Image (cartoon, rainbow, N blue to C red):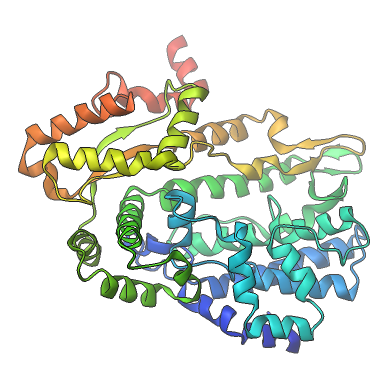
Length: 446
């Protein structure tokens, strides 16, 4: 892995060096102790893989990259995570405390106002890099289609970013899953977008499809075992609640996170919440790994789109403070102190977006991968959606102290949410059979 002198100067800026102190997987190290790799090394790896995609496309004659194209793609890939804050996915994607890191132009402009912006300007890359990092297509391209094609290399459905973090996250979590590097030979251009070629000489290649399905399988397994691990969810909910309490008390501004690393953020949060017992209890429990446990659990089984939309608006988007009001009501009903009950509700719009990658099936036929009606792809899509859970969390001692209070809390959750508790509702233990419809049908035939 080699970097040019210009790329080395970008790496040496404060904004990029800060990424050394931001863990790629946030609080997942509480589950997988070796999952302490940072966004800095991910940036290096993603840039390297972007180079491999470029070389593959160039060698096959799919696209002739100019030197300006190469410099831009590698620079943006190196910098694609500079707007990340400590535990950003937890705060922005799961708890929705603030806009996503890639949907906050003010944060990006503040970071580019430092030495990084000066270096990009010196290299003549400031404007196109900013456009790409802000989610647009750079005007450095000859036309919009070429700009989008270039963007797909580092920000597409299956791209350099994804291929690096899948392999890196799996390895540092000790999961023995991987994809084969032959995936890079499948990249092509289709309709002005980066795509995957599943044919050769007009004949469909089942081996190529298997390589792509393996990428989807990795993405699903990492989501199931790491990104949505129950202990990681509990830790994230606790830290998010502590930050919300600090922000409500005007002890912390979310914008302060943009210049902090993980350890510095935790230290500052502890200091600024010294007079907030509720936040201190949460942080002390995290330090001792006394993670909250689920007292109520609901799945999407039997829920229609209207119900899921309402749950999303109330408890994910937190419309009119509905999430905090429910948490306060549950605490008051059980006599628990503030912050002792936390509602965790990720967006129900969970999808395995990688399945939407465009694939070429013959010389004349192409479509999204998900349209193939492939049995394993359809199963993975369904299982990924089924990972969604709405969870109400409380300290470990909560249930042991008084079983009656726990039962009352479950009943109150069912009433307020209009959902049954997954563990107490009839047939809850049989829901997993829905993941394998073909197996269930064969069993019924016997």
